[in-house]
Length: 165
Image 1: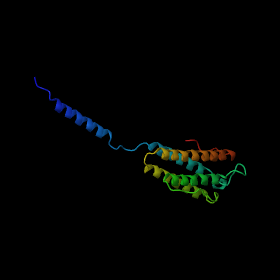
Image 2: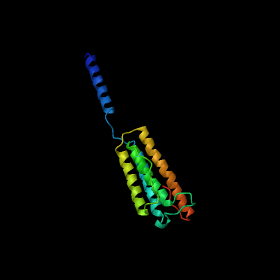
Image 3: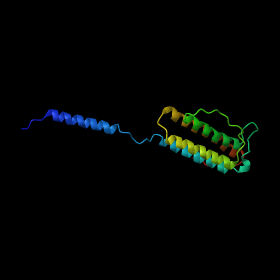
Image 4: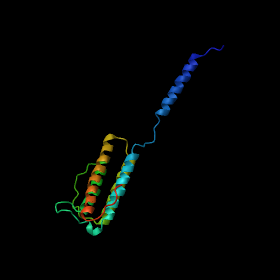
């Protein structure tokens, strides 16, 4: 009967354990922000659909005098995305929107598209971080709030809004 060399067996077990740990600790593909990418893309698509569906002449519509116009709501969404983008990149930015009525429908659509694309690019380059994720979720909540107001403007204007996505 052969003797078992326990030192060789022990060394082999140790080598296997070290190899297993090395494999488990290798950098993995980052996928946790895929959800945020999907949510931002959906928000972008739906927001643009809401902006595109309202006639240019109705961008000045307000349900009551002390509310923002539809166009001012659109500007507010785009400007707030620009503000959130700066904050997510760690760049201090003052809230200075100026005249919210200054852009045409086409300019607002382009501005909104640009700001969503910028945020999506930011998350593609971001390191995983709870505060960063909370910032993106805050931007999404803010966008949803104002987009919901714009959907109500459709109804107040006797129009059917785009279907929720």
